[in-house]
Structure formats: C-alpha cells, structure tokens
Image (tube, rainbow, N blue to C red; front, side, top):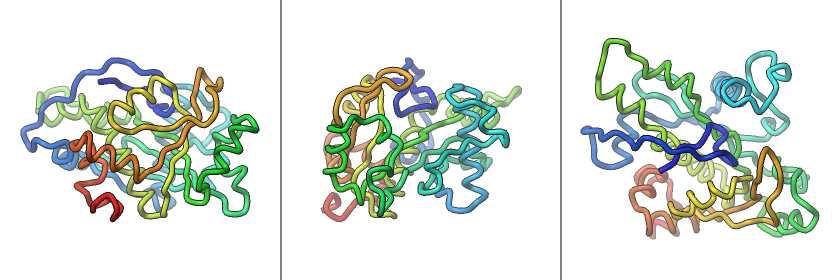
Length: 263
C-alpha cells in the first residue's frame, strides 16, 4: 500500500504502515464507522473548517500555496464559489481531520468551470468539452492534515488500541474521503469526475479498480501530472465487482450506489 502526501490528487507516493487490525469489526466499513464519519460541509462554519484544513496542508505542511495570500489562515480560491465540500471527522472527538471538494460545472461557462482546464491544450480541451460536462465535477483539495491527526491521536500515557488504530489508519481515512466524493456525486447528480493526477497515483488507483482515462498528454504542474476523467457509475461497478471490500466502504454499505449498479 502507499501513502499520499495531503496533496493527494497529483502527489508523491510514499510507503506506509499497514492499517492496524481493529477488533471492533472485520470489514473496512465497520472499522471506518467505529472511528470516523464524513460530513457535508454545508454550513459557513463547516466550510471554514475545510478551508482551515486546506491552509494547514497546502500552506504549512506542504507549502504549495503562499501564506501571504491567505492571511486569515484559511485557504481559498476562485473555485470555492461553485464547489461543494466534505469533511472527514474523528467520531470520538468531533475533530475535523480531512477534506475534499467537488468543483461544480458552470452552466453558462463550461469552458472555464474547472481548474484543470487552465492546463489543457486546445485539443485536450475539446476532448473534455465533448464529455457530459454538465454533470461533471472536478475532484480537488483532497487532503488530510498530519497536524490535526496528531492532535486527535496523541496520548502520552495511553497505549490504547483506539489511539494505535488512528495513528495507522491513513489509507482508511482516504477511502472515507472517496466515500464523501461518492456521496456528493449522488446528491448533486454528478456522473463524471475530472482531475489532475500524478501517473503513479493513477496506477495505484487502477489497482483498486478506480481507472481514470487520460485527457490529452501529461502536463507540467508541480511535477508531471495527467489530466484525466472517470465515469462514476462505471467506476462503482468495477470496484464492487473487483474489490468488494473497497466498494462497500466507498458506497457506505451500498447506500450510495446508483440503481443501475445496485441491480
């Protein structure tokens, strides 16, 4: 398995420690539900929580954005105005540990809906616009804060298995954020995702039966990145068939599956 840096979509991959076995339940979903939950960031307060995590990740832990451009210690950009957000929360403490967003399509300006479009050449842009862009969203700001995670798991006296589990549950937390993406997609009628990803990450996701298709050539943006897209329903069908434990996790036990996949 691998750990991504918090800039997960288009990031460097590093070895990780496997998830610690948790006696509460055998399935990934049971383990996740025992310790975490995903919440829609659908209030001003929750959106600020998401932006604080982004500031910690993108300005402090992995300084890809300048702190001077974010003086209020929240990270924002022009796409927040038409994005929906999800939070990953520690169930026991209620602390927000991670976030992800979907940048939604602009009905009257599809050619400038997504951040990835700024990096596409004219031919690649035509490919993107030939897809069902009215029901497409860009996966963005997929991040889990090391700092907030340490605050939640730190216990100087205890060797409690709960603390040990949280300390080694990065892969499960990332699956939780994917669950948040699927939930938002079902809620808002999103059928396709686009993204900008490192080729190595694409191969890793492919091993999980999450297979993005390229949109044009690799581009240079903080390293080599592949513009790409995926059909959400096709992805869920593949994961449920080939990796059912992952499928159960990201569909919240099947409750987030489209009718066609459930059938």
